[in-house]
Amino acid sequence: MTRCISQLKLSCSSLSFRSLLATQFLGAFNDNLFKTIVSLLVLNKLVQGDAGIIYLSLTAALFFLPYILFSAIAGWLSDRFSKSDMVRWTKELEFFVMAIGFIAFVQDSPAGLLVCVFLMGTQSALFSPSKLGMLPEMLRLEELSRANGYLEFVIFTAIIFGTAMAGFATSGSFGNPGYLCVAVALLGVVASFFVAPLRAVGRRSAPPLDPFGPNIRNLREIYRDTPLWLSVLGIAFFWSIGALFQLNILLYAKASLHFNDLQTSLLLASMGIGIGCGSIFAGKTSEGKVELGLIPIGSFGIILFTTLLGFFAQYEAVAYVSVFGLGVSSGFFIVPLNAYLQEFSPTEKRGSYIAASNFLSNFGMLFFSFLFWFFTDYCAFHSSTLFLFMAAGALGVTVYLVRLMPETLARCINWIVLHFLYRMRREGTHHVPKEGGALLVCNHVTYVDAMLLLAALPRPVRFIMYRPIYESFFVAPIARLMKAVPISSKDGREKLQETLLQCGEQIEEGELVGIFAEGGLSRTGEMQPFKSGLETIMRDRSQPIIPVYLAGLWGSIFSHHGGTVFWKVPRKIPYPVQILFGEPLPPESTAAEVEEAVRLLGERATKRDGDPQQKAALPTESS
Image 1 (cartoon, rainbow, N blue to C red):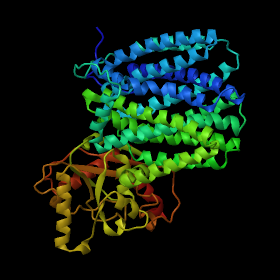
Image 2: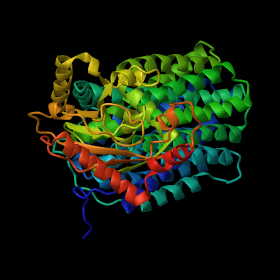
Image 3: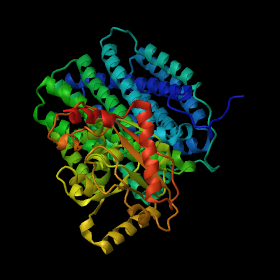
Image 4: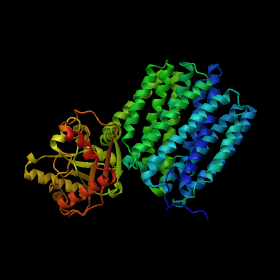
């Protein structure tokens, strides 16, 4: 008997997950191959003057419409039945739709091909809630962002091959493209049988007959959870602006760059490559968490590259670079949004929530498809003008996001910068609680120690920082955004006590608080005795103390090695550093006991790899 994995969580390297990726790749390949062939056929008629732009919009609208009509039933099916069964059933449906498409190609029937576009959209609408909703049921939650990165990479790699193959298919080199579509659908059916079975998790209920009511009710429920609602709005914006872009890029390639079908497909494929690369990087950056700070970065990229397309539309090189960059930015934007929706949707309604998100997204895509017709046919907008219109929309979204999540944006930028400057090896991160409060106590070697720990952990940490460091030029902007707590011996005894007790209350409320208990930066590379402030913080608390040791930083440009800070040449970029997290200590531990635990971590690093801090110090001391 095949074992269900409702309780047994797998990794991204499992056969089941790889089979899901293969299933998704083949489906997305077929979707884009067939849809792009039909779009190019319509566009060729447009260039010849036989049809209007409205038919190009209609082709896209026929694919989006089923998501609006059938997303409610798709969500119900995903929750009511096993999501792995739904994946198999919808892949079998794809095979029959492609068989109909084969007949339409043989008959040279435009109407038949448009009907198949609608049926293909129906199959995708039924498939989507299950393929996304099964990830949290199949995988460990810390792998969710990485899995979404892989999934987006696979989807847009499939877009690359699907759109590129469409250019070859319309050239007549392969005969009837229906043969290829049917063969790929059959391979997808085979791959779906290797996805491990899952149990149904939803409650039994009557199927929804109203295509709109259930989605509206689910959206109202999502609206009560502000972060979840914002993620759904972000996904809708992404796909809506993406639909407008995909239509506009076809017109842009033909009218401004005078590309043939193959060149147009390759231009679209370059965006697919970009999204794939951006998705993988977004999954890597997330490192076991949902990293929302990537969203504003992706939005900034969308503004930049759509603006370049708007102002330099006539240059082929600018087109390829901008379309690729737009793809990378899009990967940054969509991966954390999808991961957040999957992780924080209620388990028993996850399929319905994803279906409601699809409903809103495709309603936006349908609206933007007709907006494309209105702007280009009725208002006679040039394709470059539409790119500037998209940049303006992305600008509004970006300003809103930066105001909404400055802390997450700062954490994400910090992660990128610190991973460029340092090659971090972490050990014992599992000792840091995934939720709930704790006090992190660490040795202090450089001006960027707090930033390094922030980059090494999936959770935000509020650091108690020596005020001169807090107010330093490089640290101050991030320290303020990360709500660090400045402290100084000049504050007076009462003020110091008040600050430390407030930090204890924050730990009690479930936050991570970090302190460098030496009371100042090391001037020699050696750890100094710990102050008793940590005892004040943890007085009458029940949360743990986590000892932390930073190894290898003495000698970096941000340390006092050599008697100067900053004014020395980096020995190596990225600079190797180890961050060791020890086993939790009881809250009543004394400063001396915590100091001993941190020293033991340092000795462990020394015995295993030699003391990198002492190695860094030797040249200066001998000179």
